[in-house]
Length: 317
Image 1: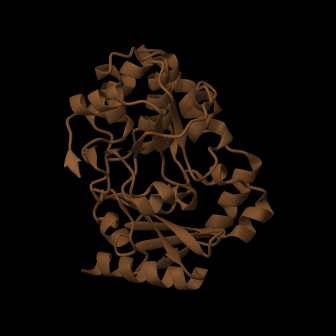
Image 2: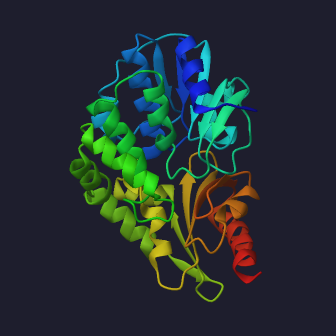
């Protein structure tokens, strides 16, 4: 992958049209904020631009998604955002895996899959890269775009509690508030609002918790049967991955969420003492030192054994 500067990224976006912006499956606030914020900006320039994802966007992000005009077209330029590896695109987007023209990412584990790209692992959120690119294109960041950017920053930094929340994160978040971002509403929606279904699935996940390696590793599971029993949707599980890490003495928290295609999405979190990106890389995943993910085929017990074995190595070496 040829590395570009932010100015060159802006130039590429300005000179192209009919742009697809790809997100990873099970999109989070940062991926959604990047894709929609960028597409809103591109549409402001009169371009055809649409965010594309294998999975549905959770309804709670409607305050962002409703601000974008729906367009139908065949892409001539393909961009990926917040995507470390093409395996994370999901089945619906795998057709684009070897056709990505431009990658914008903040994962140190990025595999360099695109023709050109920009990866800044020091950015607490990928939206911290998108915002200046939008401004370099000569587009004024308004309330709609600011809401998307702020959402990416606050969700990827855990409402500014995680170690990746740098001074840049705070300054850019403040700038988005100055530009109209409704920070109070967004933070309440993302962190302090839970549906009854969310409470039920969280309770079931906590009841499944197991400890390993002298309580240094905590594992919770979310099965399809649990999802059906609670009535929860995918969006209701946001944030659960951070719960096991909150337990005193736990160095690695693992959340195993069953998917329809015969396996589990693994979300790994650490206090930063252990690099969970290295653990997930064993299974074709990746991410950041303190937050990473992967997908492992198999039954719950098979997947649990595989990921725990690697986690145990990490905390005992």
